[in-house]
Length: 191
Image (tube, rainbow, N blue to C red; front, side, top):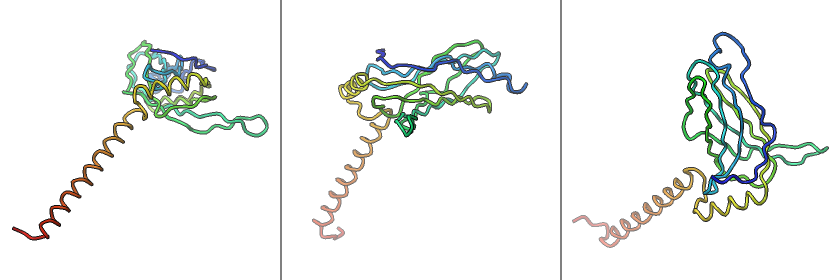
């Protein structure tokens, strides 16, 4: 895997505070680190390192919203949602386990400054953590080139679904034209 020079800022561990006895299984789940990187194909992924410090197996639900920072008025940043990331499969963390979870980003990100809002839901409790990171011009360019070289214009299954849609659509139109031509040639007569 090739890691391109993405800068990570604010990667402090996130731990659910102890709330009640019923939440004891969740209170030791933590996000240890966040990394935005590119696969050799140019597809962007997020890798989260999760730790289950408790005594029960956990199956957290994870979602990440990626927002781009734009300069606003009075030197303040304004953030706009640009992409989402979800794991390929539901993670299962055994007691005491440290596990890296791969999340697929649904669209490419241009060079710039971003924030990632990480939401981890487990047993009715929601952990929220925000990470800031930057994507360099060169990294975005290399990822786009890798995507083009690997003929991956769409992310995830969207490209395959799009091709399937157009193939089926063109097939239906062609079959309709053949049937219409056959009916016209026969003059609509039944034999």
